[in-house]
Image 1 (tube, chains in turn green, orange):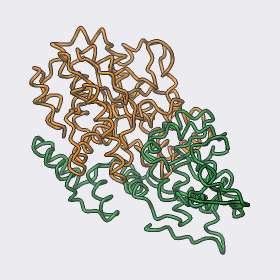
Image 2: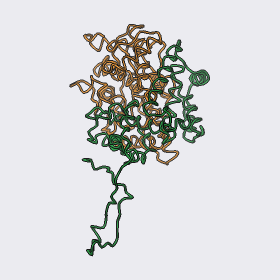
Image 3: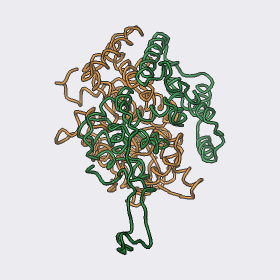
Image 4: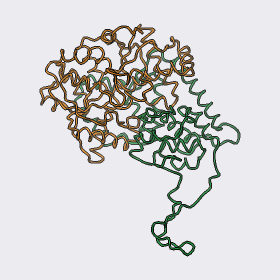
Length: 255
Length: 314
């Protein structure tokens, strides 16, 4: 593997010895660290196809591991374990167990598109991150991430009414993730806003909080979108082998 | 689409797509965009009965639904209103319209889904090329330009030191913005300058700000707040280190993200920053002689009125 910013040596497989004698030769000091060898046998040969079957993952096969995505990544700069190139590599060679070691952080992709912007092969790494997080949830490896809950709350309103009202989205999101709306910083924000807002605007905001803003004559669009999304979700579940007899568990956590 | 018409004429009357954010938390952006349009003699005709573009969220349910949502907005502008240009001040809306335009022209599968959904929803399918979608920055830059702005500015921004913050969606990924990086006069995706150009023409001093297109974590502003606070703090600190008094914004999600996490950083992590966050349209409005109230400074969470009034602005 040409990229050295992350490799397959697991930290716990590094053996370091203070004092060590091998075959009668004292190798203490520089030569005291060894890598415990391992053989990987549990490949999931279908992994790349499964990711490619989910929206955003379609072009994962184009990747030639240049590492531009990880180099550009916003989240990687904050957390070096967040490594799109490495995950794409693992998916392509089917190292599912290795991928699962990072299962709790993949959803943290902020969709800044720096990776997709820089990618010389049009892999759309941002989409691949979304496909991997989606895959982890569909397969039951992780509960729904807070960001997926937010996406669902938001999209649900858009599909139902054609529009969203941000206050409503925030309240529903906090309710569904079991967080109190009374966060010190949110209260401070509301206070600062309320200090200066004219009565008319407050009334308008209150009104749209009570009655969701909506696009007129939206019902036909809503029905069409709902049908389409249902179809897509069924197709994706089939591609991941989730509905077949004896397949993996089909329940999605917290759905 | 009439490519031959010069932008100055073409952008004089545009279909205005405010989007959901500008009716909620981004209201001061809506207000100041309209006020600036009026002051500059430009005509904004709101897209009739518009819908949400899908923002950053619907694509994670299904990207083609997002393409459909955005295409409906453009279809109304083109087929119902007979407009050539759709102008969106929100980076999210602008990005999604451009993305839909790109996908409909290059991806037959997206085009087929959009056609099916449009037919079922009962409106004409949007055909790529029917309208040109532009951002508020491109609108003012094209319709008025720096020279035009210099002529109209009353008093100007008096050397106000500004860090211009463009965020992610205005420039990335490059393939959906074929008109950018297209030689002299065009916008740059790596170092955007349209906002810098306009504010400089309005009398501001743009500081050397390295994080113009850094991410504020807007997509996870509530679902991963600690990460967003960290990313926003980077931006605020870099702006202060560059000597900025104000960060100028051109996206409601970035703007409220910066405001929200500036407070959160102070409350949760005792990291206080003083730089003020103001929409570029609010700054242009002040330069054009509008009052603080007319551009909605009182609707911002970030309190900039004292600083601006101290310079005789607003």
